[in-house]
Length: 639
Image 1 (tube, rainbow, N blue to C red):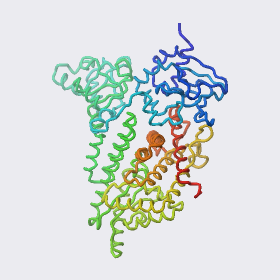
Image 2 (image 1 turned 180 degrees about the vertical axis):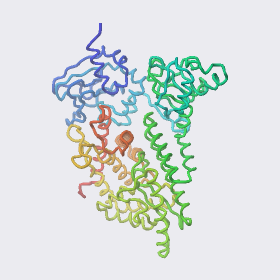
Image 3 (image 1 turned 180 degrees about the horizontal axis):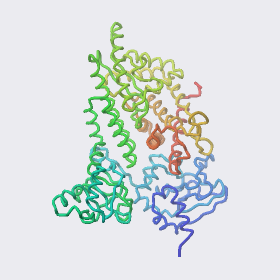
């Protein structure tokens, strides 16, 4: 007899992560063991420091507050579909917070003994719990808790990335399937293939794939006279058809073709011939996907003789980025590879621009990427932020030298615009004389910002101080960096102003964790992911790393990882900020690719439960790091 209550529980859980990653049959296997718990308002589910129950909980209706008992502060509110009380069970430790019903609440108590094997076996479930863990800990992005979650740590080996990434890089395939029935004349099929310019024809019966005819079949069976041209498709086709799921990687596709000695794979809904065909994958498709491999793209970049030849390579970089996100490659590795490819394109634009100049550069120079590109965090096509730094020259040579580099900078910024990098609306580009300066001029400018830090100077510092050399003489940038750090050391009050500026970004959430949306303008009722979530973390990392006089690290999460080493007492917070900054950048990148924009403004209505949950999990890290800035740099004295 069917257990209707158990079925209703399974149907409910299936709507929410991480249960949504499981098949309904998998859920139904353990839902009969789930207990339904009713809690009146203000009743306690568990107390702090108490031993963990044999269950963790999912909120069916109502709300559960996770409370820091010493001061009664509600650190988290778990509502419909949220999980709580799981981490202590996985980590074998007592509860760290009190769980209290904020209203009448119905809970599902799930036995940990049934769920733990699922976490171990299902990568998607484990990844979700690592990334957005709704447990009784204030900081779900804690590196310590993340490590304790599964009892195992999965490491991604960054060595030999060229071949390693082929193991995870998805292959693009054609979804435009041309099919015929087994009784169709092969002459008809040949004419249709020729007209459409395709190399394979899928043979289907009752909507399911039963065979495939390729150019090779015509050459080997028909042209040789083995099979007459009047024969039917079922005589010539290769059958049974070899099928695979759609999430094949390049390596898997290559191995499948080599194993069976074929040139086409049929991709179906479940990877078997028993479901509808989704696409056909050819050797040509694999070659195109190989063309999006990082090492291949870098070589192709260096071979470009004209700027317009770089545009399709940039498209290949975007395809690579999409694939890495789909395969859940660690953000640190994804960012590193995409940033190096972006830098390779910029370098080639500079080389091609230099060739257009009448003479070689009069003195050494360095091209600086600023902002997100300087931090190696520019994954999408955003606008340009760059500067050109050249060696000192005499007063008599200054005008001629500056004119040369301004002409060069205009060629470079124009070339970058042509391949997809929009001009900076604020004109913070090397083609602007304000950002095309000698080393001495940049030293004077940065000294002014540091010693007289008004709002404009703080804003300029926040953008410029994330610079990274892309092309040219590194000694020039090293000299400038040494000057900046020495000046900051003599004027520590600048850090207070910089910290105060970092606290100007509005809070991401209001009372009870509600998202704070834009109130007016073109993006009214949208969530500003950049200003409310990413920038507070980026700005805080910049201030803190400057205060420690650490040179050569501009990437946000690398700054936090360095800070964790420098301040062991705050390592937990810094590592959580590192993790949160990567999670937010991944989220923004996915949204940007999905909507073909910068990913900055998010419509919450278009986010599912899992996406909203993951986004909210970063907010506690933002709040905590801003509290550190306010206290450490006494920002109240400059407000």
